[in-house]
Length: 71
Image (tube, rainbow, N blue to C red; front, side, top):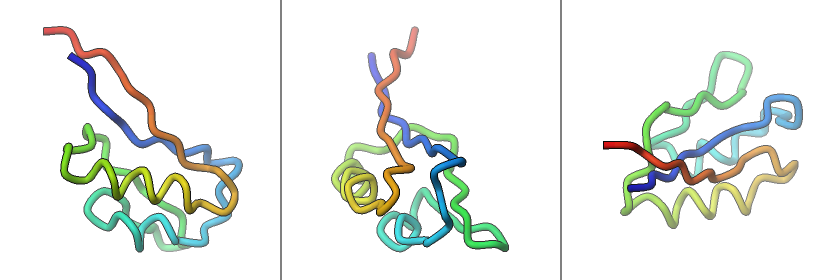
């Protein structure tokens, strides 16, 4: 079984916060405006929102990664 996870390249990120506006269920901002991503698989119902957040990142710091989960 595979799971979808959201990752961030902290070097690319410049803390604009758009991702947290688009996906507040999984992304919160720290005191400086940089995203903190919940370390959980993305639920199926939030996958379209996660894809939109990735596509909307102006510096391409977000990515979706599919991981294989063993039973």
